[in-house]
Each structure stands twice: as structure tokens, then as C-alpha cells.
Image (cartoon, rainbow, N blue to C red; front, side, top):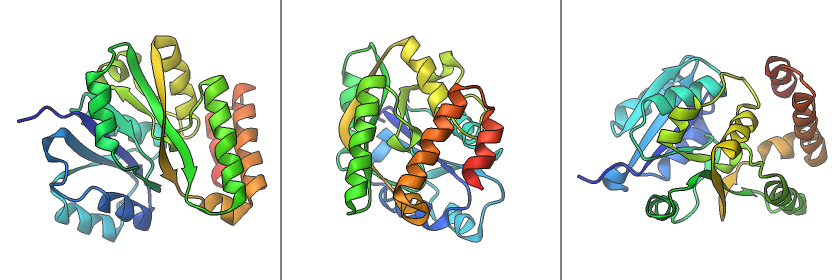
Length: 232
């Protein structure tokens, strides 16, 4: 039996349609023994999730404390893959994603983690501007966000203590520690992210709110307060 190359860890909390679409991209039995899927649920599962548990015995379902950091850690604790790949429930996987991890597994040992490129599922020109901005942020500051599918060697994840148990900014805090630990690889292959927040709240308003949260975090505001501002 082949060793598990990558554990796909998905934190989910009440986003049933998005989670269903994501799981449909990895049909049962389509990836053999190289991939395992772990869904870390925060809060009581909805009826649709309960039905999917029964229909997809190939998926490991974890009931975790609500909050992205705790959910990600709970999923990682159950993982067996050489690589952990953290993907938000409202994402869409790129083509050839398994080949990416096969290449990482066979590649230089000093690469300990990284991220995919950022793409939005919208034809709007504003989406292209935001994508370019994220590309610059990653290029110049080495700072991907969680919606870019952060990945890391499982051994390194364990050695660094995993994600801080934060309701928000767990990705920024974690990447900061990874950058001090070793070399990261930021791919040009894109993970597709839902544009619904930007479309609903306004392209520049949502982007300004994201930047504002990052700035307030760097200035010392607690992630709990930031989460209340972000999710209200």
C-alpha cells in the first residue's frame, strides 16, 4: 500500500453547499491511498453533513471546538499524510493538485511548506486587481492567507506546535512561525476562492476590512475582538 502523501484538512462550520461542492471534487476512490480527507466540523453538524458522513466512509469527520485554529489543529491531529494541506470549505481545487504534492514529496527536503496562488471565482475586473495585489503581498512579504491553501510537512507542523487556538489571524501567526523555521514555496498554481464576501459587501469595502484587521492585529488587538468585527 502506498504511503499517504497528503492529508486534505477542511475546517467547516455551517457552510453546507460549499462543503458539498468541494468534496465532490475528490470522488470516493479517485485518489487511491495517497490522499486522505479530513473534515473538522465546528459546532453541531447540519443534516446534510450527517448524510454525507454516511455516504462517504472514506472521509474522516472530526467534531472540534468552533474556531478555525482549533478546527485545523483537530484535523491535523488525525492526519497521517507526509504533507498537511489546509483548504477552506468554500474553495475549489486546482487541476493536478495531487501531482503538486508528489513533486513536493520528491523534492528538496528544506522546503517545509508554502501556499497556492490566489484566484477568485468571479469574472469582475475587481477580482483581477485583488489577485494581483495578493500576488505582490506574497512576493514581497511572504504572507499568504489561509484561503490560499497553506501546506506544511506534518513533522514540521508538530514540531512548531500547529496553529495557535485563535478565531482569526491563525494563518498570519502560523506563517510567521513557519518563515522562521525554514524555506517556503509559493506556487503559481491557483486555488480558487469564493468571491461571495466581496460581491455581497463590496469589493473595496471587504478588502479594506481585511487590511484593517491585519493592521489592527499587528498593532496588538486581540484575535477575539478582531473576529467579532470580521464576522458581524
